[in-house]
Amino acid sequence: MPKKTNAKRDDGRIAVQVYLGQIDGKRKYKTVYGSTQKEADEKALQIKLSMKKGIDVTADRDTFGKWADRFLLTKKGVSHGQYVNYEGCIKRLKEVCGDVQISKLRAQDFQDYLFSLAEENPFTGRTTAKRTLKFVRSTASQIMQLAINNRVIDYNPLVAVEIPSDAPQEHRRALTDEEQQWIINTPHRARRAAVIMMYSGLRRGELLALTWSDIDLIAKTIRINKSVERVKNGHFEVKNMTKTEAGMRTIDIPQRLTDYLSEEKAKDFPPGTAAINKLVFANVRGKLMSDNGWRSLWKSYMTALNNKYGQRTFADKEKMKKPGRRKFDMTIPPITAHWLRHTFATLLYLAGVDVLTAKDQLGHADIKTTLAIYTHLDKVYKRKSMAKLDNYLDSCKSDASQA
Image 1: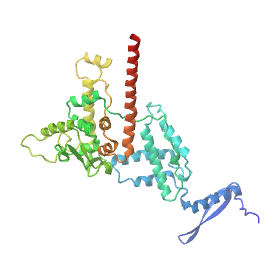
Image 2: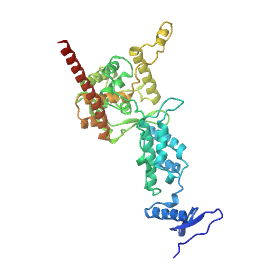
Image 3: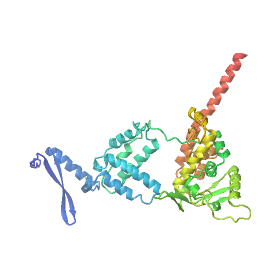
Image 4: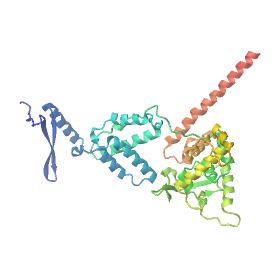
């Protein structure tokens, strides 16, 4: 029996109809086109195969941008800062593939985009950090997965997309012994925050929500049961939750921090003053700090450290010859709250604290995060240990040559 052939349309294409079933009481068809009968039949076959998989073939014209917007609606419950991150990432993704049918997107489309982000920006000279590239990939993958869950597509192309191996790591590190002494020895209103984060590993949001009632100086513990979240007006709000469920924890603190906090508490509650539920680190009015207030204070702190420990440049020395206020070049490293948290993780490692205890102390939701830090530190400090062996062998060689 000869195969059925369809008549050519006026535009030269051949149309084939695929029956989709009864929709709203009416027979529904989908028409596909091909330049030849074979091409049209193959497209019709693909439609039938997709239907067998449960794919909603009526949504094949849905764009990536449409599902990106739907995905963003599912993120209304995250913190404001995280929502802003998703919003910015999706805006950039939509500029590249927002109008493209989501079923047409392939792994190479996203791979090319990540490669373009990893290239050096000719205007700024900067490249996108590996952590940011991972966030872009994760966001795109979640959008595609949402479409899969709704039977629009049956495959997530992001599973085959890799982060460029030469993308730079975001520069986060622990403070050196010398830099830790800078924190301890430099008076400043921000020093209290820095010392607490360095010796307890608190995140900034956990620190800003901390009250004196959360600290038990006798048991030498800090209870973490809340955090701050940035809201639209640039202010913070206290939430009775932390970044993750694992963040709700009780931290054992070292004696050095206990002694420091005892001294600081005495400043907040002089003798004869009743201890109240007061913020440990607040603004000058004793209220919750704003995001801008924190940034301004931290910038002032870095300036103070730079003035005391920074190396004077030639331009600085020229300024010193003239009267008036001086703004020296910033030569110290850009210490951040996360660097201080990473310092605490490093101190735990150096003290021999096991990885499971470190996970609990740091409030990591996934043990892999803690293991990644410990594995990295293993490489660094084992390399230093081998350097000591090299130095020892070199000294033995010199002693033998002199004998």
